[in-house]
Image 1: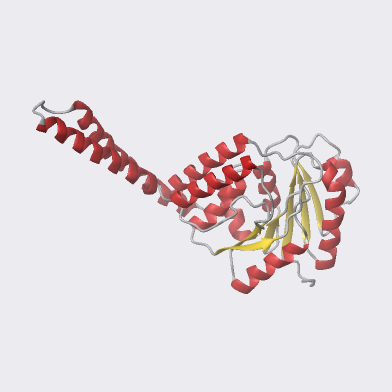
Image 2 (image 1 turned 135 degrees about the vertical axis):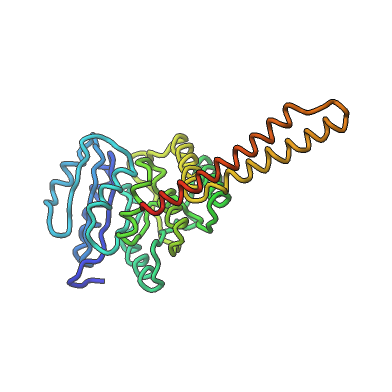
Length: 294
C-alpha cells in the first residue's frame, strides 16, 4: 500500500482510553509510517493522561492530535476527525485495542477492488458479546431492517472505511453519540451507496471499561426512527394511517349494524388515519428538500 500519495486517514476517537493508547498508538503510528497513512487522534475531553501520551508523538505529516475542551460524545469525536481529513478515504478505528491495523488494508483492498462507498469491518461471529449487547444488537438490527431495508449484520461496528467526500456530507445529520456508528451506515444505505461488509479480527478489550450502556441502545433506536422518517417517512406514516383507518371503518360498521348510530370512536380513528397520511405526505416533501441540501 505504501506510495508517495497518501490516500487514507485513520481517525481514532478517544475518551479516557490512556491505558489502551499506550500500546495502541505506537502500533498504529508504526503501521501508518510503513504504509504512508495519515492518523488523526481525537481526544474527546479525556480526564486521564491521554494528552501526555499523545505529546510523545509530536504532530508530523502523518500524525495529528486534536483535543476537545470537554467531552462531546463518540460521534462528535469522529465528526471532528473526519472533517479534518484531506485524503480520498477515511477509516474509523476504536482506541480500545479491539482493532488490528492490518485489517485496514483488507478493507481498503475491498473498497478499491469493488468500487464501494463504505466497507464495514464486520466483527467475526466468534467475537463474544454479553447477553445485554447481543439483545440490543438484535433489536437494533431488526428495527433497522424493517424501517430501512438493508442486509447489514454489524451496523455499529467501530471500523468503517468510507469515501471521505461522502462521509463529510453525511456526518452533518449524524448524532454526536455512540449511535453515530449505526446512523452513518444507514445514511449510506438510504442514499443508495454501495455498502459492503468484510470480516475482520477483533481483540477483547484489555483495560478500561466500555462506555456503551442501555441509554446507548435507546438513543440508537430513536436515531434509527429519525433516519427512517428523514429518508422514507411513508414507511412509518402509511402503516399507521392504514391501521387507524381500517380499524376505524370496521368499528364504525359494527356500531352501525347494531343500530346504535354513528360511532364517535370509529370516526375519530378514521380522522386520525387521514391526518397520519397527510402528515406523511408533508414529511415526504420535507425529506426531499433535506436530501437536496445534503
